[in-house]
Image (cartoon, rainbow over all chains, first blue to last red; front, side, top):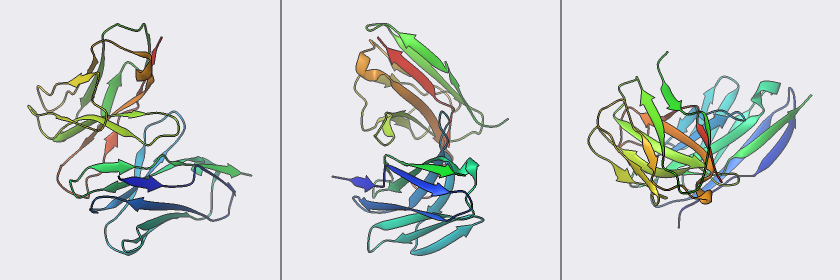
Length: 109
Length: 115
């Protein structure tokens, strides 16, 4: 079966750095997405990786290792507004999106 | 403002009743999707449409139907609601289909409670 694993919940301190991991086992691979979802709101796109390596976008970076079936989302200089759930999703060989259950990130002052 | 509009925002429904969740997009996106989101589970695809006039079944299609008469509208119908259909429903769209780089734009969601 297809599976995406990510931690259920993480806590970090304002101003710090946090890394949210995602491992996947899917039928083929055509890209990995990270979405952010604030409580009670819709998911919004953060990043897309299809090649190995690090993609940096401001305070957020996303890393991919296809051989290890592994990605992480790195958030720097954490702000209170970063408190949200972070969803990892993989596009499989049929271009279907497989979603993880999300990681709830709690930021403390 | 370009985006996706869903209605209703929230609804309480008696079991056995018929319900249609509405979804309209103004981005001229080809593909549209309906997901449900339940606590502790990832987003699960109910139905999708790659282009106007076509629809397909997702991971959890039973008890739901959709239609895509035009590019903009993609309603989801529960013919006879059951309590297990209590969930938050998200409509989404993307410009293309068969590409790993399809970014989804989501509506604000419809919270449905079936009693």
